[in-house]
Image 1 (tube, rainbow, N blue to C red):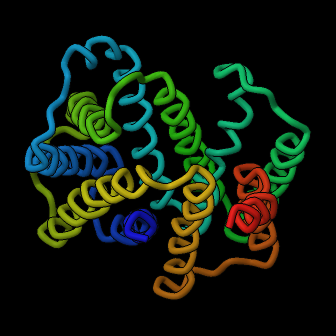
Image 2: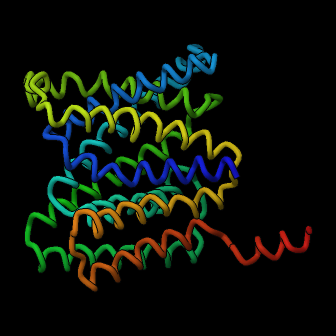
Length: 296
């Protein structure tokens, strides 16, 4: 039960990222730099308070994958925050949640996994759902929404790359991996931010400071801490099911708190997208329930 609560709390925290980001008056790259830096420092504090240590021998052995995954993490955040700037949280979230579809498409090529008929159908349904969201977004609100959804899809592609790259990291604890990725992402983003934005990051509006700290400590640091603490004792099927708390919270915030509108066609598209990824990630819930009943 404790693991379930920890994982659900992490999903709720991740689901509020779009709301928090709305109150930060910085570019997406500056926001990504600050959130990754603050999150890294917080997780390092937690890591050492737990009296854990990082094996630099293992870091060296996985250095190239850690570097590439850090680039993917930075790109993921930049485009996700950019997506929130151009469209509604709902559209950005649905675009971002196309990541599992990218993973399904790339898994046979990168991981040499088989792609069964069921997953091929799910990919087709997910693409149809995304086309409904994008098409209706263009007709309803114009180019702004389209650009926001496209940024969400690019963020999803980076996140898919991150998930696939992490599968090649060997013998390292998840929390240690996250600390190194966050730290490396910060180091990579620093010259990029200074080159593109200059030193304007030093002139952060006072009104944005509490939300930057919130994004770094709570949404990044505590969110990842609860995420990895919870998933340690959860089965893959439970993780897949509980992961849908994240988009549910984000869409709820979009509709109830921010009063962002969603058309029927977009709702249909979102249902097809989320439903197809849910079905693809869960082999057979009914069979698992029957098996548990039989064992009892």
